[in-house]
Length: 182
Image (cartoon, rainbow, N blue to C red; front, side, top):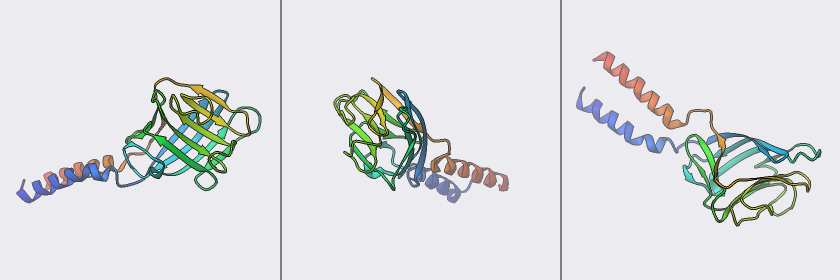
């Protein structure tokens, strides 16, 4: 293998960590919360590690608190997101929330945070965004239901390969093509 080809392969592999963060990532969720549920998607800017509300670029979440009020869709068009603390994180495969953490929350709520209706909330031990603490809750019209957790939980997963995986596959194919030529 020539020095130029070796240098190109090295440069491409050095760029892989940056490529993995270059594109938005959409995570799918389907959760049971007490007698209710929440399902849909959350899209991030591709950041890995602790997330803040600026890293969440979109969401479409169908919530139902199980009281007969029916389902409601929270989206980045009709609702707000409030996040605090460092309990919500992302990696290439999942969104995670550390319910055992002492302080932090992620609240998706319509029409705005603090309105008292239509929410999905993830909260740490001392956060109480929905009055339950250390768990997740969903509320449609004033009958919240919740589930208590004392550990970190996977909230959502991605089923689409992230850009870094695609880049690795591309480099492997290019390497095979170069080897075949030589």
